[in-house]
Length: 464
Image (cartoon, rainbow, N blue to C red; front, top):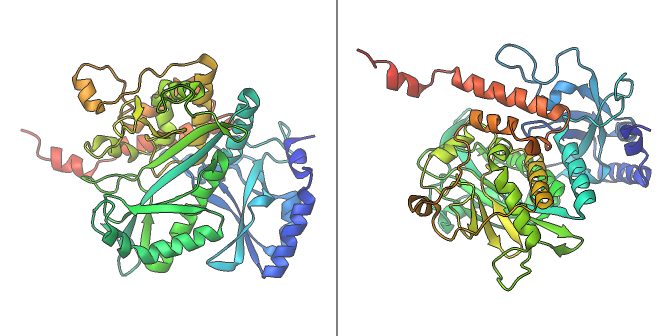
């Protein structure tokens, strides 16, 4: 049997399909988005009238392989990842993710797992390895099989709500002033917040807290942590919700990491812990209540060991590295860890979890979670010691003589580090590594082959 056959033949799946069919009829749903996530985190897929639910659920839909790379052309005019001669993928819905859209009750969405075509000569019906969402599930299953542990994660999705002009085009101007934790600025965004929370709760996000951050129009709303793949799905859903709320309120939901200099960027810190069943294995197991248990320490050691290569996945755009260049706004650029220390890449944010900070709002969470899993597994396998936690401001510690590696300063440097890190590359199995590197190398080359306003201002009159 192929992977596709086993997926379709899962115990209980036919009953789930029929239950959704009854919901479609009872709730008057007329249209369904069959969606998946591309290499850059974009939501891709097809829309199909709801009466075809049973057929799509059992046979799937077809779409070109290149859709997993946004069907994007590189600077030389070649399609990224897959050319026009490539076969078509088969997408099959993960039935449990079926959910009506609260802003349009006649439309529902369902996440899909991707496969190679049934009729392909090589590996027909196998999992498509450029499916980042499917990869995360499989990498997590392998991690659990090898260690008996699973990853639970929460994220802190910072973003900026920008003004739009009369034509609805976004401007680089926030809706509020850059006052961090200021309730009055938070209140100014309350009409937006109400809609985002209402839609999020209807789509299964357990919203827990939020605040106004310290950039113009910058908002962070959080939901409860869960298994890694569920948190990744919820971040994807949250982004979809925010874009819709922007349309309804005449604002622009901006997830660009650094649209403004001189104020904080948009991070997306990942708070993570490893569990054995319902037991948190990061909790302290010594007399020191602040020191993680042995499993936590080795996991931290693995992440620190591979932080430079991991940066290509967690800070994945050219603009991401503006965040690290704009000093003084708590962006973590050094591969160290500490207790409640916001100058290090990892901090113990509470007993039983640590916060990975070198990640921003443009992250593809399926890739970042996969990267954390493979690097933590390396730390566990090799019993890596992260050293003593740094209690000092890391800049003062370095001025005092401490030797600490920093993360890459550009996307190009991060991609070089990824190429040389076989452990992190395990997070990009099969076609995924080739597609990711093609896309991101092209992004970097397009940037360095572009003359910017800064170039003109700096060099137009440089000589004699």
